[in-house]
Image 1 (cartoon, protein in one colour):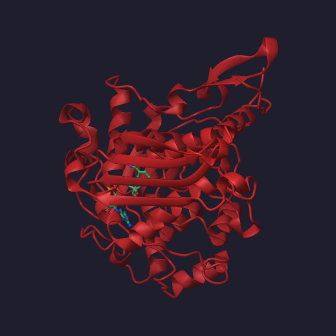
Image 2 (tube, rainbow, N blue to C red):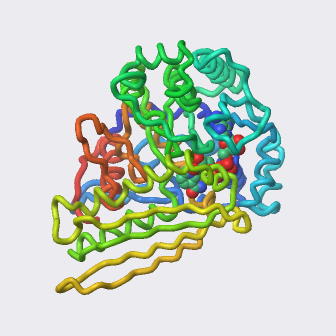
Image 3 (cartoon, rainbow, N blue to C red):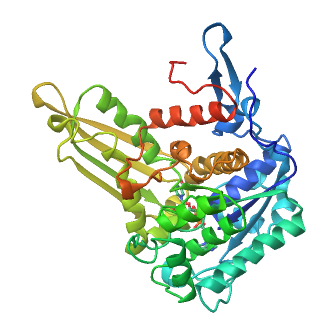
Length: 436
Ligand SMILES: NC(=O)c1ccc[n+]([C@@H]2O[C@H](COP(=O)([O-])OP(=O)(O)OC[C@H]3O[C@@H](n4cnc5c(N)ncnc54)[C@H](O)[C@@H]3O)[C@@H](O)[C@H]2O)c1
């Protein structure tokens, strides 16, 4: 019998979500409805997936919580920050993702989730115009105020542990300043104190505050927030895990699952054009070129590490990869994505593949939020810190140490092996790659 060295998940788990929009309210409503037995947490691997442990005669298939101690859904307590003052019930209704019949049974719980004032800077998301915003002297003060929010929430709710999840709008692109502001903890703190608003995004204040308060931090948007050496160092110094970036929900999930077919079958690729129409507030923010840039960088990274020109120059040299997101209000959260893939086969003859995914953005993102929060809490109790690469499975642009040329793993099935092996290891079983 394997023994896990992970601390037990005793007491309550606080989940503090930055942003109380479509994704967050769909996530919260689903958890609360599941708790009442009124729905099923479909799409959540922590709730459904079974992993093989042991080999041969001794092999068995166990759910995650039979291998490692995972927090129970009944022990979760939510709160959030947002630029707009609407509570989680109003926000869920406004988002129009879920039908009222799927929200009303947990109305009271949602009404009680009133957003804390946001740490916000309009220059980072010009299309947003809410007034539920903190007054801050500088970025350091912003960080201090967020830290106070975290401490107050802990005291008032009586939770034992807290995870902070960014499910707020995508900020404008902040290029990592590797020789300056983002190079070390000291440089980052100095820039916060000097109110360097160009290099310190509000999201960095949330992340810094979370880590200083011993809370794991997850970046669900493509922001470069914790993808910089200063945050990696802070995560190690505080011994608190970080994960990011950008939930892998629709088109990129398909891409990271489909590209391996081309790569494994030794077919060539001459181009991959991905486009989307999307009409929710996320789409509105991404309609701003500076915000779209952040998303574009994240979405483009997926193919390059799966179909690698250096490894197969005949097949993957110079393929054209383009990603577009178009704001189209009538579709709201029901995003439609088209992928046109130009491949070539025997003797270079061209062929095409078309994929048309009519998805629901927040319905796909909600189970990822749940899994990421539960697995980050697990990782923290297991004594892990730094970038949690085993969570790459859930992320469009998995964090990796690019300063030493570490390559990200984007291949969906390799990511799944990493995820399973981490769970096995934390559960005291041997990691392996045997076919299940
Ligand atoms: N749904 C998906 O499939 C998916 C996939 C990958 C990433 N994402 C990312 O998840 C995030 C949330 O998406 P959504 O559809 O819920 O968007 P949304 O616009 O409905 O919600 C985001 C909320 O964040 C708030 N906000 C913005 N800046 C803030 C700040 N500094 N502090 C506190 N609150 C702030 C906004 O007011 C808004 O209410 C976006 O960044 C999106 O790009 C979503």
